[in-house]
Image (tube, rainbow, N blue to C red; front, side, top):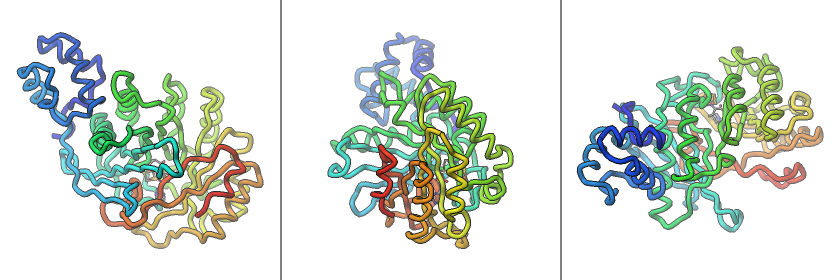
Length: 373
Ligand code: SAH
Ligand code: SF4
């Protein structure tokens, strides 16, 4: 059963308690933790400084999550890799690794895009995940395992660590807050992967309690909010469950979040031809976001099973971007990467053939004209 407690489900204090309950000293937990999150061990057999009897007990009582890579696709340049992962109960999720060409990214970033749920209940009409419906929440361990899996591969290939995690795969992370947050705490743990919280981004469709909760957290995790429309009526057409969290209230929650955390919010806006991509709508969006410390990511929509939703032309995309920029809203257009590997992060379970990934937001609003589409 995939939802059984796995090693990756536990915090370090929880692991210590489990190990003490087995009659072993707490420092054994630290050793196991290091093996799991510093060396990315894939079995207890690798943990050679633990007593053999303890390793056997742990393998029985606290197994590694039962997850198998069903398919892995790589882009031609090898920089983008997508995994279709089968969970212990047979459900499928997707995880994507995005590396950046060292010629254009001296920081050597490696970003993992993780799923937080198998499926999604929000039903966005342009999203393949939303159209397929909801299966279940992922456990903390299943979220952590997506990152550790790629971290191990990076290590084995002699490449650098995973530097960034984005919750932009399948699912609505705020609807699975507890598991998502426990995963964030494991990924940022100083004695483990020690990831910078600022390099982790949670993307939400506008789940207001989640935004408010995130504002209270000690860790400085980034927030991205998917808007897609400048007004409530259109938004409810695109995000059928949006009425639960009306647009003005989402914006209020974001303003409070910025006041409280002094952090910038990213707004995602999927551009759909003839639906939400007019310069007029760009101006309304700018009005909505007036005075906010924010950044807009424009995402020309990827094809989904519903082919009535299409991406706008390049000219129309740029016109939208220009209209926003003229109103002083910093924005970028998401640049396409790895198109050939059938990998839109969280947008497919097998069948689609298009992918887009987020490039780093520009440092200044003036950078936006240099972003190609
Ligand atoms: N549920 C969360 C996070 C997962 S979706 C959310 O909606 O924010 C991550 C991003 O993928 C969202 O911004 C979403 O709008 C975008 N997305 C969904 N379907 C898409 C498609 N067909 N083409 C491009 N981006 C898409
Ligand atoms: Fe769910 Fe996000 Fe897809 Fe909407 S865009 S259905 S919230 S995963």
